[in-house]
Image 1: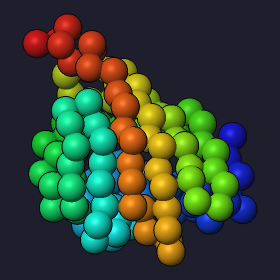
Image 2: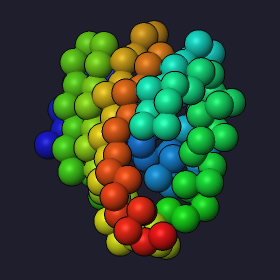
Image 3: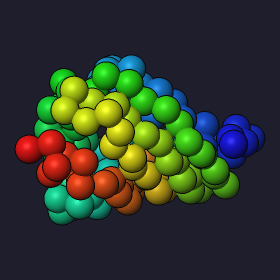
Length: 119
């Protein structure tokens, strides 16, 4: 379910569409210069660090499916499943904080178990 009347959700969905479409530059255009991501591997500060984190994943990404998306004025939550070369299902969720049309914070969670089992 998506309600695109939420400004934060509109930004989140555009960001999601960009990176799942393998357009990392467009995805990064939705991030603020002071962007911070808290991911299972630790904190990433700035768009460049996020690019370094996401680029290898995009090389193995073969598909994605949005499961749910909700948002309000300043926050959005997207849950999705990705398909990759090593694993057919890799679920994840991102809680995004948006200010002035840019994502300033991403609390990114994903299931590492499918990747560990495939190793």
